[in-house]
Image 1 (cartoon, rainbow, N blue to C red):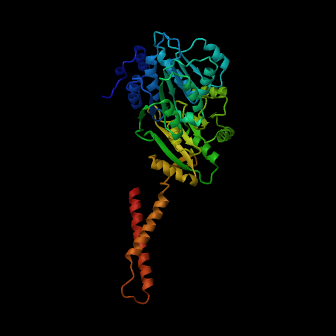
Image 2: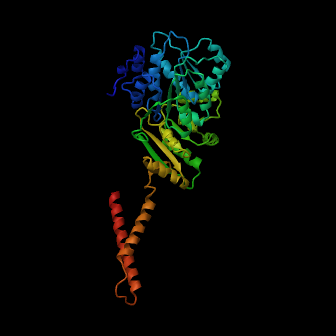
Length: 441
């Protein structure tokens, strides 16, 4: 029988206090399905979209099994980005603050003072969270000892693979106990990830939470045609017209993100930017400015679509459609969180038609709008011309099949047939036009 409350899992009292403090009422689907497996000691792969509650699906059962009296690293949690690592660490602190016995956690990531990290490891924490590169460095330096840890969590595993961190994770896992409980979480399971999973996971439990909808129901997806306008001018006008609480503009490359951000700055907008070329200090500063509501607009690469949780995003704008269409869903998912509604707009050109058609086949329903003199105008279905052409073709075919060559051929029969075909087509088109007008009313 499906467990409906967190109390039914038998977690320690301090965790129940933490859960109540966070305002959680009922477990999400990924939590309901993953937590019993983790409690039983099973290695497992959890596949679900961003924002489904996967972080707490592993934090709660892991924290429940931490022994405060044992001063060894008992769990290692890896994340592909510094921001995600820090978010996981902050969630741990929100839960452990209710424990009567101290449970220690540390967050280690690249771009910070490594020597200071080493000095602080004279006492080993119970839980390590961080980026694989820095954790692996500390293990190699023999400052961090993971040989007694029971848990290894790999969060956002597909992004970890894309960013080249699987080698570091592999080396960390190689120094951990043979009987290791490995927990892998990912939005997708790419083929290239499977050899790594097979190496460390023997018959793992696999939990795939299918999204009820590919995209949240309260997101409005809008297509805006570029036409003959300068793209950056159109983007600027869209941002001004939307007047968002907070908007994220997505580009495909770091270079394009800088180009767009600089152009918007020149047009007088105060814009933040997030991409992989920022120094750790700059990224930390930008994230603080975002949380302090210093920016109304952010230009970002797909690093921000996965692994960075920014509250209050009301609008997402695709300056470019992502090359990997899975990222469209991740981008759109930055808005309409925690029950709020949101808008995901895409500036598109004729070359984007195939990608848009594929997104429509995946279940994304687009509206079609344009910006005219600073006002939003709803446009007709962008496929209307194709449908109209298809209708015309069908009328032509039907006319040819109905008006046939007479059995007894008389002089001038061809002209007579042509007149009948033209007359039939005119009549059918008038009827088609009336039907369309009736539908609009």
